[in-house]
Image (cartoon, rainbow, N blue to C red):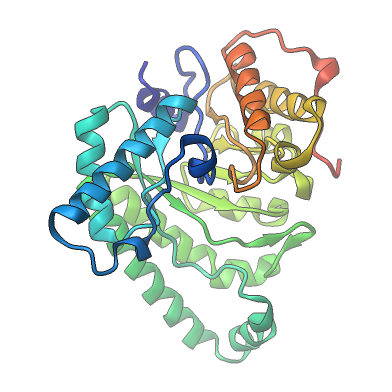
Length: 327
């Protein structure tokens, strides 16, 4: 199976041939590891013609190299670019790598946790002007759905929706308000993604357990990040909903950032054992991303665990498992 075929199998809740698929939503070490800077929108301002094409081609080459190096199933590094540049980048990635990798879009539009200074005002707005808030949510997801459709038509097959809903101690909005102001609109954009032919993946950090049933009810294909620092246990999520959604993540990113080798090994093994490497529907990933400052040796150790133990039937040493931190 190609990396792309492996993640399709996992998203369809099947067991891929060979290793469990792997992806990271972000990888911020391109300069330190590959010696190349990944493009951001600002890098293209005022750049036109052949120079712009050359920049996009080099950026496409970089992200294909990242995907090859770490055996990613999805190329996620182009979402920082303007939509037209993303679409053009998809063409260049296809020229370089064929259909070995899924292409991705990042769109959401639902109400996430607002910035610190806006939290109180946001909640007051929801209470005092609920219809205005709902109209805003409707417009926002419609606009994001249009962008998602455009990117899917250009070649993206998977859409990551990344509005964060939860803190470590629970959701920002209580479940009753979440059901009113978020769930219907998340359901709406998921349906739009499916109608356009894409897979819909919901990312949120924090303790999702009080709203997990609502997230699953929206029809998402998979859920990321399954945050172990908030006490989210992939084994419990798998038990509750593993027959309905794919699971992505739960390898403790705080361990990958600054933990011991034993902690990285333990968290990786726990996720492989209980996330679904044996039963299907699991995509190996950190519980957030590979952000700036992560020691590359730590990420490589995480991937060594996948290489050694990330196939169906692997005998994983349970005495080395690391449970989510708050359990």
